[in-house]
Each structure stands twice: as structure tokens, then as C-alpha cells.
Length: 366
Ligand SMILES: Nc1ncnc2c1ncn2[C@@H]1O[C@H](COP(=O)(O)OP(=O)(O)OP(=O)(O)O)[C@@H](O)[C@H]1O
Ligand SMILES: [Mg+2]
Image 1 (tube, protein in one colour):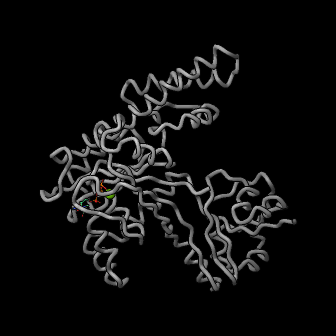
Image 2 (tube, helix red, strand yellow):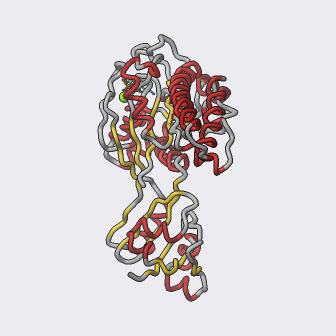
Image 3 (tube, rainbow, N blue to C red):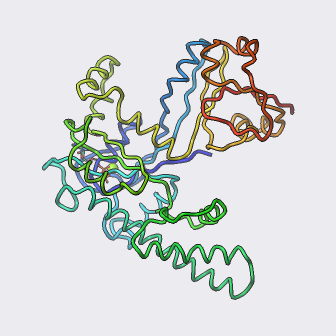
């Protein structure tokens, strides 16, 4: 399944710096535009206090957190949609992702080059949006051409539906809006997926700020908030360079002290991982016992048999039922046995939609 979040933005805004805070893999970060060319892929552990709590209760031999995949992509520039600055390759990298983390430079520093010569995150955002929209427009136009040909040679209702949708997207994109602003019914949204549009991917913004603005942001962050207020997108404020320094510290206490000085109770990048997880519409269920406490990732809305299939395909094929304990009950009663005695185990069938935080035990036969 492995869904991916891509880190996107202009060159030299701090994408790789942010990525480095997230992953133990060290992506090359440096003060010159286009430092990143090949995308860096990180499998990032999702911090989860619930898993820690379950491990405290069961004291298992192994504790296995879940992960999310984050890709650090090269900076885009004006003209990327026409191939400028290796634009085509980088846009291709974005196309392979399922959601976008758009990094905006909200820090001043004369030593760090800005490709457009001044700090203006709202302008920067528009540059990136425009390039992605232009690329999408190209995609939609060539699709419309092909669909028109197909329509002439047949009467496939699916072709007609796709055609109509492509035309609607064309209109939206020509108005300088992103594809995601078009409201669709579920059925249409499924068809829309087959167009693989860049601006249809869910997006969130990271305002990369200086150390002093880590807690409360600054005027640039305010400008970003104002500019995207109708987008219903999450905005995080992170001092990426500072967090990169914190990530280097060995001692937990040292890290906490540094964070406190910044006025933070947890690293901004932790929030980022959780936000990325939400953006991808991912949720977590748990399995736990004396051998192992483990977090499993599933897509929101997944039914029990498919959730079981994430552990092993046999679990899905031979699925009988799922025994469900709510996390709060597990913590309250302290064991599966105690939950059973208290009547706190739900027995659910094939249509059960797994909920975030469920502790599951699958019954199956093969
Ligand atoms: N919040 C910040 N404050 C000050 N300097 C920063 C901040 N964030 C990043 N930098 C510095 O900006 C420079 C560029 O960072 P980085 O290499 O992460 O950019 P990038 O967006 O990945 O660029 P590229 O698109 O070229 O790959 C680095 O020198 C980094 O240390
Ligand atoms: Mg980079």
C-alpha cells in the first residue's frame, strides 16, 4: 500500500533540512539552489503515545511502530512545467506521491540565496501552484484530445464521463485554480483519479521560520495564513534549521531543554509526521500481547477483512471475524482477559469499518 508524501517547494527554502530532521537518513542540504536532484526517500516512524502505553501494559519482547513514507523532492522553478530546471523530472517525482507538503521560506537570512531575490512566501506559493497548474492543464488538454477521438469511434459511457470531467478541470485550471478546488461526488472523484493531476493531491503547508519565530510565527506566516485561508489546508510553523540542530543532539534531556527554550513541547517535525499521516488519510490499529505490541497503518474507511490482510493475506482470505477492544478500555482494564470479563470485546464481521485506535484480534481459518 505504502502511500507517500512529497516535500515540494522552490529551491533553497529548506526542504532537505526539514527532511533531515524527519529521517535518520542524511539528505544533502546546502546553501545553493538545486542541491537535491534525485529524490531522497525516508521511511519515517510515526510517534504514537498509545503504542508506548500498550507496551507498558503488556511488556512485550518487541515494540513495532508504524511508518510513513516521505520523499524530499528537488526544488521547482518558474518554467518547470516547460522543462525549466529539470522541471519534467521533478514534476514526475511529484506525480508519484499521494500528497504534498509545500514548504515556504518564512525566514530572513542574507546568506541564504533566494531564487527570486526576496522573501515572499505568498509569491513563492503562487509560483509553484502556477507551474503545477500549467502542467495539469497540459495533461488535461492532451487527454481531452484523445478522448474526443475515442468518442468518435464508440459510445462508451465511461469515455463520456471522463471527457466531461476533463473539460470541467480544464476550465478550473484556466482560471488559475488548482484541480482540488473542484467539488466532486465520490463516483466522479474515482474517475478523476485516473487523470493523475498534480494539483488534485491533498496539500499542507510548512512555514519554515527562524529560531525566534518557532513558537508564534512571524509576519510571513501571517501572510501565508491569509493567502490560504479558503483552502482548508493545515499550516505548520517549523524552524527547520533549528530542529535539525536538535535532531543532532544525543541526549533526550538535552533535546527537551532545547525545545523548552524555543517554547515547544515537542519537535515541530513530530507534528509534521502526524499531519502527513492525516493528509494521506491514514489511521492506526494495534495488535498487542506478550510477544509484540505493534501499530499497523490502514487507509481510513478500510473494512475488517482488508485490515487483516495488511498483516497477512491469509488473514484476509480466511477471515472469520475481528475481536475489537477500544484503546481506552484496554488501558482501563489492563488486559485482553479483563476486557473479556468486563464484556468490553466487540465481535465484528466483514462489514466492520476499522476505527483509529482499535486493538484487534483476527479470527481466521486457512
Ligand atoms: N529556518 C531556517 N533558517 C535559516 N536557514 C535555514 C533554515 N532552513 C534551512 N536553512 C538553510 O537553507 C539552506 C538550504 O536548505 P536546503 O538544502 O534544505 O534547501 P532545499 O529546499 O532542499 O533546496 P534544494 O531545492 O536546492 O534541494 C541550507 O543552508 C539550510 O541550512
Ligand atoms: Mg533539497
